[in-house]
Length: 336
Image 1 (cartoon, rainbow, N blue to C red):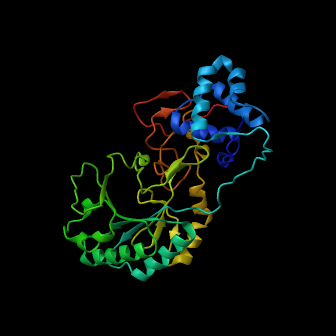
Image 2 (cartoon, rainbow, N blue to C red):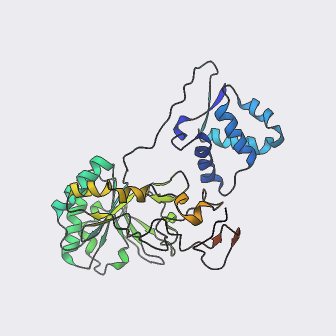
Image 3 (tube, rainbow, N blue to C red):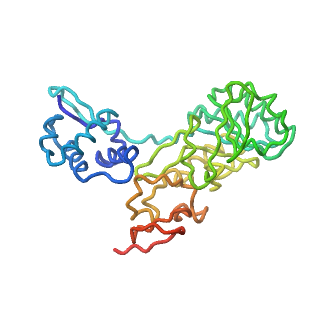
C-alpha cells in the first residue's frame, strides 16, 4: 500500500499549504519543520508507504508518526494499492459563493412578495438554508410580517429559522404566530432569556461577540478558512431599507437589492468579490505575522470599517517585535 495526498485537500494552492491549513485547524500555532518536510516528500515521491516514511524520518519518528496518524485518520492522506495507476486531479474552489445564512431586518414595511423573490433566488443559486431575522422596531405589523416570512421560508426549503437578539423585543406574545416555524434564538450576552416552545434552541452570544465572531460556531453557521486563515462564515444581511451587507456585525456596504436581479448584481460585483476573497496576506500587519494561519480573528474587526485591508482593532500582538502588548497594536513597520 502506498500513501498519497487526498485530492480533496488540493483546492488550496499546493499540497503543503492545504495540509498545513488542516493541521493548524486542529493543532493550532506551530507545525514542526520535520512535518513540513514529510508533506513535501509525500507530495513529490511517486512510491512511498507508511513504514518507508517513518524510516526515512526516524530522527523525528514520534512527531512524524503522530502527524501521519492524524492526517490518515482525517483522510487527508490515503493508503491505496501500489499497483493502482493514480492520476492526481486538481480541485479548484467553486466560483459560486454559497451563502449559508440569510439575515434580514424586518419592519412594518417589509413585503412578503419582496422576500419571496429574494429567498427563491438564494435557495436556487446560493444553496442558502438558514433564515435569521431581526426586528427594526417593536410593532405588531413587523411581527405579523415575520410570521408570514417564516411560513414562506419553510415552504421554500429553508432548513432553519431563527431570531437574532430577542432581548430587544418587548411584546411577550410576539412568538405566538411564528413559534411553529421557529428553530432557535440568538440571545444577548448575560441574557436570562428562556423559551417554553418545544424544539426551539436558545444560543447565547458571548460578551465579546463583536471581537470574536468565531464563537458563533453552531448548527446555523458554516464557518471555513480561506487559504491564509481568515475566519468567517458565508452570510448575507439585508436591512429594512434593502441595503446589502456581509453580516449584521459587519456593515460593509455591498449595494442595494430591490429584487433578486439587483441582489445577483450586488453579489457578483467586484466590491463583494473583494470582500469574500479577502485574506490576511492583504493586511500589512497580518501578512508578516507568524500566527496568521491559526488566527481566528474575524474579518469584521477592522480599524476602518470601510477599508478591507485595515488592521484589526482588537489584536495586541506586534509581529515585528514578536511580543504581545497590553494595548491594541494596529500598525507595524515591516523591515525588509
